[in-house]
Image 1 (cartoon, helix red, strand yellow):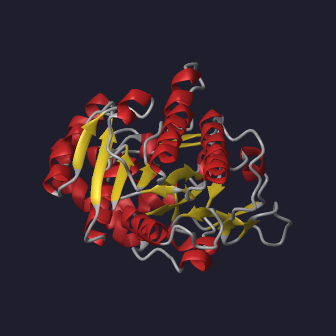
Image 2 (cartoon, rainbow, N blue to C red):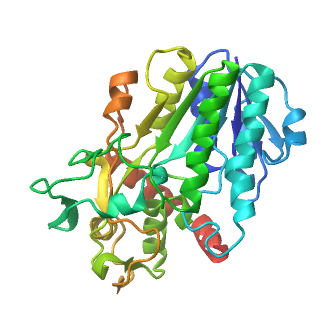
Image 3 (tube, rainbow, N blue to C red):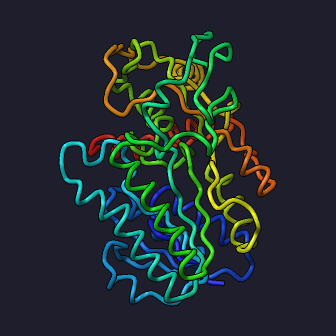
Length: 356
């Protein structure tokens, strides 16, 4: 079996290629990446050492994909991941990254009769509806107020696939939602399997520490380096909550999906760490204080920014019921691994911070 992994030199793509290569005895991995993200080029040598074929190319360019060998599966890890992308203009670049690239990949799936896995985003869910969830302060975080009515698809267990996807979802979220729809239409029209995994924050050692990769590694790196940090929005108390997932747990799900292309289960599932792997910014600072020692004074900014949300925890019960899947790496294991990697690679994160 041959699998094409897009964005293979990014944090998620590298883990997907590496873990799947180890999970399948007969797997051939071809990876494509445009290497636009600073630092991604450092992942080429480790991937080649594992026997992965690397192609320097861009999914936005159909001619780059035409040169690739036939694939049995395409796993799309390539995207512009910033929720603020396009806000200051440049929506053409956002759309070309996140939607035109998907269309080009779907055309390759049609030609190759290949299956398609799209790593979508929790950002497809309605920002207005997320901000309407009743929340109450509990210790150093916000929690769902179960004494008050919640929007459909929201509960103390998190956000399920039933939650609203009505606009606004951000320009970024709109491109991901459009990609989902087009992928399902291609599957119906041309008869190849499609799985859509709506991922929350993915976190682990080796991330580049940019804010658009997720808050957890960014916060830990900034803390270690003594660089400025801020609690922004919702009163500036740092009570807002997100959950996170280790990439190895994601690839365990991908392995099941590749092995069972015709499984009679929903095509769209939420994939995330859930309540037990969630944390507020203030709790994250408490972890950093314990793991790394004194850090910067965290500034409070009361004003809430466009597209911010106070609470997102993944309700992944549908993925568990459909695939007998659940995360295995604990919250503490993931955070401690990030902190350990940061201490051991301080010069690397200093260099990355200097150009971010």
